[in-house]
Amino acid sequence: MTPDDPRQIIGSFLTLLPATIQREVLFQVLAFAFKINARKSPPDKFSELALNHLQRDGIEGISAVICVTAVVDHVLEGMVSNRHVGEAVANAMEAKEPENLAIKKWSASIPLSKKHLEQTVNEWRHLRATKLTPGRLQDFASALLLGRQP
Image (tube, rainbow, N blue to C red; front, top):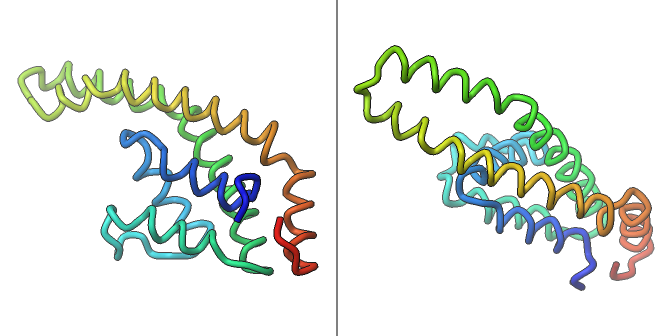
């Protein structure tokens, strides 16, 4: 597999996601792209499961790339759209239970998660605009269908 192979690019992106958001993204990739009940898998295996499915050749490889790309688009944009909800819930819970350490810890983690999400979304958008464009995904699919390495 070459460094320009979308399977490699996506796999690298998924494995390098910040820990603050990786589990949520991988959970949804497994569920929506590969129809795997991630609830039955330990979270420390999510990355391995996703990578195994991405490494396939032929139609399965093409399908994996297209599905994971769509799921990551969907998940990240959804996380961006809904991040204010988590902040509002945390603020309301903290106001209601100011002595609850679990709520304080969760609330304190939100700025870092927000920063990680913004960085991740920017990186993904850059990949979609450069290495994972529709044209490049079409070229990848054609190469696999013709039995060539992308």
